[in-house]
Image (cartoon, rainbow, N blue to C red):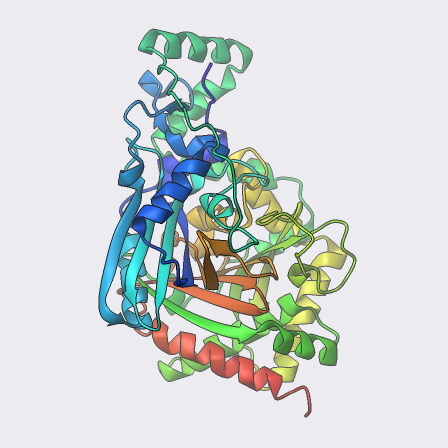
Length: 478
């Protein structure tokens, strides 16, 4: 019997359209080694290790009449060269050209008739660099412990040797229509309510979704009811177009840790205060009205290891962990960022207070409950935030800020050392900006995915993140 998509994963497929593709992505920049790093070597590496991620050879198969959720089946015509692609910038390609390419690639939906992932090797970058851009549909990442393609190709050693995995893979025959209907009937007998829910979900019945949310939130404490107050209106919740812009910012992890130590906060608090400061200056640059009481609401999913009691759990050293091991505890907060506060120290203290208040009062259940509307726990941290954003970005929050710790040791792919890694978090309906944050090898990387029409100045905001970091560092000795 083939694997059936979970309710959450199926919802990603049902809600997707050309303005809101439901894939998460990443951009990794490498220094090309002396032994060279080309398309053939990357293709060979992925071919040898693809058996570690069997889902990457499977496609989605619909059940006739939407009587049950779709199933995963082996792709009988799987073509690795379709998924691993080659691109190039005109030499010497600069970072702005790379970011333009990322925006164009992320704007396009994945082909639902094939396995839902793509990987691009980008050559032609200046300073002897190459880049890898990944796109993975959120329906592929079906659990907090799921393995993603990047985890398979990255190594902690430059010349790590690895035996072939499932080199003689043969696809299993796809189920017939009759088999799908029999299995759907069996599920209907065991869970009769799912038939109606599946049909409604396939039709993207908005009223059913609202009823589902109402039931999920019913009886929750007053903290949840407070979270249902609409977020402030503003330029971050414009209608979503089909095209994107991408920009990046960087910071030193030690600098953020020094701010944390000076003010008794967490690194995650410092990151949010930096984002708040940058958004403040961005609003002012646009001529928006900013008063001392102005706020922007952020959805902030945070990944924390349950056995780590340090205040800086989100940015612990991960050298002792397997590469790509996610945290096993996920919390998600709705936080009003104090963009009206001009003093960076006060801004950080307000963010820290808000985060502590969430943790102490249990208000995090507001966001967590919304996340669980899909029927199961969040598959990954990025997917957690993105799923909530799909339906509620214009009601409950203005900007999504996902914050995922990465390994604090160098990583390699086919002998090439990874220098930088930037996350790309998808937008939802009426959402103009998502901010993905990832730490890696002593640095913190911000990836800003923005709507092309609503935010032509996302590069300005990225530069202001750097300025906000400097401003925050300045408070250490003040």
